[in-house]
Length: 131
Image (tube, rainbow, N blue to C red; front, top):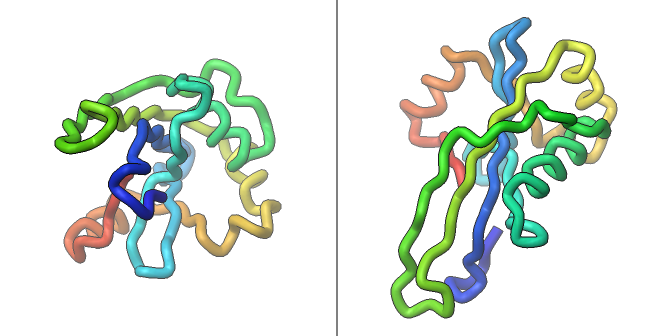
């Protein structure tokens, strides 16, 4: 997401959960790392960015389903900004919305739904990441 230290800015991640099958949505990178879907903050607003991520994934408006769950403050020495924030939002999706994701061909190969056991395996192999 960032190539240079000077480019660091606020980031929003969206943790998408499907309660019907108890799975979470992640992106699989070429490096083998597994990440939460994330984006640089847009219009200086975390909430707008979370809704934008949701729309890009599912092609529908998230309505009121995106809720903040955690904010990290990261101090940056020798940077134009004193600090940046990583805001993590959550959204629960029903199976019919989850199926919409499968029709997005460009993203399909990078996105995967993982259950708790698969997440634990990713963590054990140090492959689980978040922005």
